Image (cartoon, rainbow, N blue to C red; front, side, top):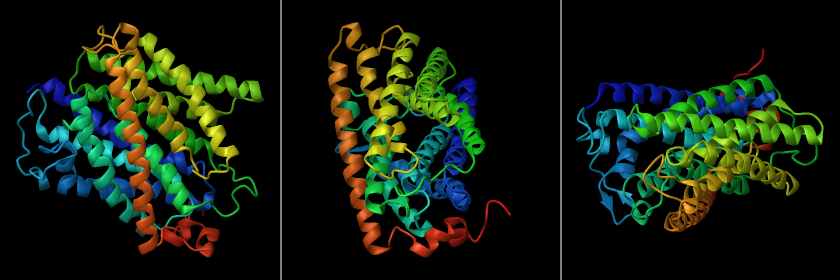
Length: 399
């Protein structure tokens, strides 16, 4: 066990934890003021609920002994057999790994709250969230990080391009189809009520992402340093792309700049431990373009995936996961992508991306349908009209 590595992952855990209220602030600023408290509260609900089920059984499903390549067993339920000793190949206590991975599960559920902004019952979201972590997130974590079938196939996901971003982005799209559009969507403009709040949330996300990607090296070493450098580079390039697009169309809005940066962060996540700065520049450039086009497509098709988890996280994570198979270089890690003479990694990434997209969308859609049929996902028209801050929490953001 290495004390330096342990200290870095403990700090990274705190950084990733901070990203969840960061998501809440990022989303809250983009909704109407009558729903601001609810959007922040949903992120804290994710932190509360996922923290409990993670230690109870979800960690074991994700990282327990492999069962048919699909899931882990329950050998770690309630953290049985989890102690201070490192797992094989690690230099940090097993407990540190557990809570670091917990924060990934928490923020993944928080990201998909984009799909239910301003119109979901709190109780129904909690039920959906428990089912989703159990049947979608935990299997994905096992498939790619717990020696599941995609890991055995050779697919790579350094810090969650598929496990976190594709899963939450495409789940959000499925959930939006089930919940339906907000009242008045497409009839009148639904403006962000507090852009500075969104910018603050974006700052917390960018800050926390250094622990998200840098911590995924699971050691305080050169790989962690590379992950942080390429993470910042991709974010900056993608943010610049959205700024330039804004200038071409009129004015470079601050909301567009930070949205582009988050697209670059999502895209570099699966690749941060496998590509160099040149690869990161291309990944950021392409993610800035395709995530903007995805958002524009959603708006034109009148799909109310309200805060663009699909366009930014889903599409960004998809591109970044494929980019691993293109730009991975042995100068950073042991794996080589297409431009370094190997096609096998790209094949594995394509299969993994297709499997992740289909499973995330279909299972999330089915779970949402079940919860909607049994409990009802959506608040009443009257509750939506007065706002979820009052109808779900009996609170207001601004006295």
